[in-house]
Image (cartoon, rainbow, N blue to C red; front, side, top):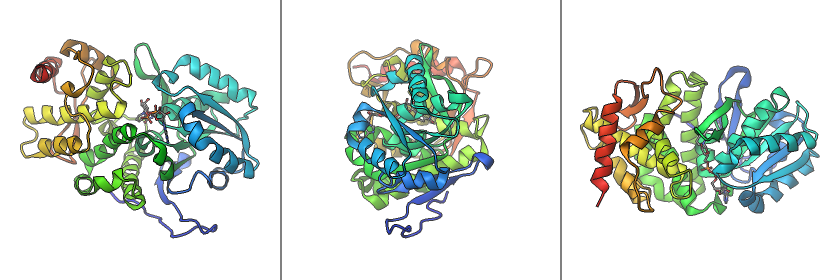
Length: 389
Ligand SMILES: NC(=O)c1ccc[n+]([C@@H]2O[C@H](COP(=O)([O-])OP(=O)(O)OC[C@H]3O[C@@H](n4cnc5c(N)ncnc54)[C@H](O)[C@@H]3O)[C@@H](O)[C@H]2O)c1
């Protein structure tokens, strides 16, 4: 995996030029720019990459206080600011009612098909806004300006958009690729530490699923990443985004390799759903536990025999992420049957068979449908029993 392929030193304005990763999807190809000060230059960057167009901004009430003014000013300089819609923060905003209201607001702002919807925020805003753009006037372009580590490293790239329903997470949505992604690492300065840590789980995932050298780099350098050291953070983001871009270019709509990106997610989603998509367990925290469960099940099934599991759990524990079901705070734990039932709703279920992403070692994930539900239930029951006092 290579990254930072076109890291010029400075652009025409004298500012540090961003690292550019290309997501190679033919006529839907786009750039992911990673660097500092991008928000203040976003008007010009959007005009350069997407062309002159009106831009409607969608954000949430936490992010708007920190970053909306910078974006509005940058767009206004270009004469392209069409308005902003500020939504309630949190997973509940990824809903049918919020989607309907957002579409109405974007139309009220006079957005036409050639215009652009800009998502300024974390994965919640990115997923909802991308879905709204995909159906607005049968398809409007959109730009992602991710402001959480999770969104910069994962959700802003690859074109998966959607909302949650009562049946589960992300069950209604569309593949709709953005036209540009601006990952401004300066925006992470205002991100709460717990959110940063949760996003790191998705970053570590890229090493664990296909790039052992990157995981080893993270083991050595995670403190610099957490200190938001610009060089370390940019490098880690660039390797992660390149990893995702490579997989998305091979399998845009997740019929094969893209499923590898779900390492830790089948278990993680079930735990998240059980916890009610609440602050009790953030998405990235659920993924961290899910990754460890995938490694532990892989060990139990004889796929890994060396110290892989210990390395993963040590690393995630060192930086403060949960690694076991019993680490979920708040007392009551789930039972195995309930988790298995939720896992049955997973979009990767085929003919009733669970699709699991397991590993043969660090950096060697594979897709399997050969683990029976009984085996998974017994494994989960043992996991839960092991952590009960
Ligand atoms: N589309 C995909 O491929 C994909 C991939 C992974 C996750 N997701 C989705 O992403 C969502 C989770 O995303 P998330 O973790 O970014 O959550 P989020 O969007 O809820 O953001 C987390 C919290 O941080 C706040 N915040 C965001 N940026 C901030 C900043 N710079 N400063 C201060 N506060 C800030 C938000 O207001 C929110 O309270 C889930 O819905 C998940 O399903 C999608």
